[in-house]
Length: 339
Image (cartoon, rainbow, N blue to C red; front, top):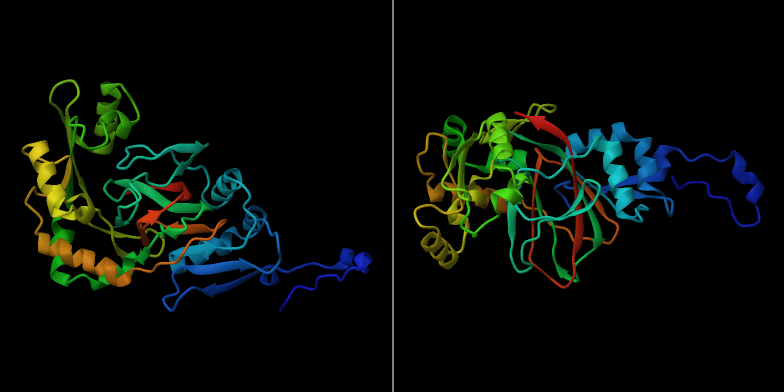
């Protein structure tokens, strides 16, 4: 039902009119998969922050059901409003610590999206799934969409799990994943950037608290190793999800010529890689099947200025398509969860 908006010349009747929550926003889907759920206002200029304050329960219910919600057409004039919206939905936001990709803080606890070269694809992944704690909620705010490409593809982690052959799932579930990172060769982020400190003692303290094994090889060279989950159970929906970044950390994710050059430059071990939890190598054919499962479940939509995409980080993986021209997507993270 359309809201009963007063016609010009009848302003006095407005005092008695109220718009119900049902008439303010309509739900639909961008595609047959239902991912993401699309919410659009029926009233021009409706503030996303103000509407969210009265509908936090509805937003969280839809997020748990669909995994991702796209808010389109709401009033989100600045990054500050996006940060306020994220705080309304997810509470105190998180700093981007123990980094795996380059980003820049924009305002408060809002960051740029991953600053990889525009011509590169970022494979689908769940944020921080290479650790034992991660944000449950991610928010993306489109300040400026790219004129060509730059989409943020997403995929349902429940469906990805179901698509992977049971023998591969079982193997990963039993062994888990060990992530190994080597810092100091100048081929990846420095440990100072990753841990956001110049103090090696603070790095060691973080590693001990996080269950990360570490070894110094000189003043600037550091090797870390951490055993993490391959499959996880969502704490609220109790559904099993594929939740690791073995396919992204493993050197097989690189183009052959890049991989060869990197291994030559790095020596015995690349800057980052992934093994099974017991240290045995992961079969590349298994990872190819994992990538195929992501590809089969991928959903893509084009950004529009002012779009806000809210993602349950355990239920939905995300990535990035190559693009040309300017592109400004801001990111906020909330609700830290420890396995």
